[in-house]
Amino acid sequence: MKRRSIFKATSIAALLISGSTLAAAQNAWPMKAITMIVPFPPGGLADLVARPVAEAMSRELGQPVVIENKAGAGGGIGMSQVAKAKPDGYTVLMALSSLTVIPEADAVLARAPMFALADLRPIARYTADPTVLAVRADAPWKTAQQFVDDVKKRPGVLNYGSSGNYGTMHVPMEILAQNAGMKMTHVPFTGAGPAVVALLGGQIDAVSTGPATVLQQVKAGKLRVLAHWGNGQLGSLPDVPSLKSAGYNAEYAQWSGLFIPKDTPEPVAQRLRAAAKAAAQDAKVKDVILNAGSPVLYLDAPEFEKYVQADAARMAVVVKRIGKVE
Image 1 (cartoon, rainbow, N blue to C red):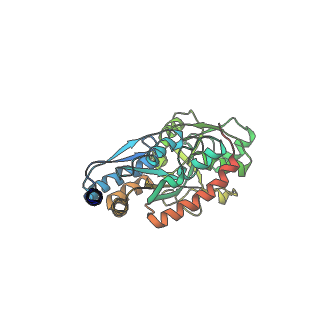
Image 2: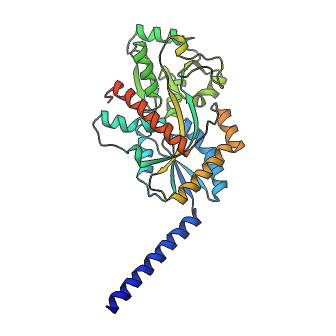
């Protein structure tokens, strides 16, 4: 009996020590650099947002936040890496809206899921822009109507680039194609940056992407934006009309936001949430993102979670309509 009592007391003490050690570790967090996975190459919206945000979060947390570009599968490879990462706060994700599409695409393709939406916890939304239809400045089309009419005359001849199947550049073009009754050839790349380079080089005819990805090339006179997938006026491109104004029921928003693995301890999650909010309010972050063409449209974690769930429900319908894409 004595031995049993001693063993029990020792076990309880060990648990108490273990618990207090864990609590102390969480309170001291972070004790090393944090990796921010960007699931696309440099040059796209996720990377443009991630870099100033990481710098601002580094100042708030007292440890470096290091960007790692992990491209592939329309963002799925990097997103999956974070979904499966150790939930200790040292691996975070700067994702785009393709996050809500990929799980549904996996189901449509009957393939093993790369990750589940529930594996990732939303922390902060930074931007939410309609994508824009961009072509080279020397292209023959001056309006979206001219572009659509030409595509319809030559089904499958003209092509467009994207960041991958079911990604944030593929989905809006498919929405337009279905609504306009036109057919284009889809050319997937590893991200928006390479797709825009291909557009500039004449390898493809058009892209649908966030304003920030093409704004500097538009200002330089190398690209022309024909229309956007939103409502009303774009702040960065006020003279560009919406597709809706041209009579097409095509609407799509490309958002960017910070996520962490779902089982991240609450004290750590709250530290990240506070640092993410401070970054959204940082004047330098706002200036960098605005100068790129996208105003900061911050949503805190609870509101962002609701936004993500609503977006996932909408995109499930769209992906099912697109169907199987090899």
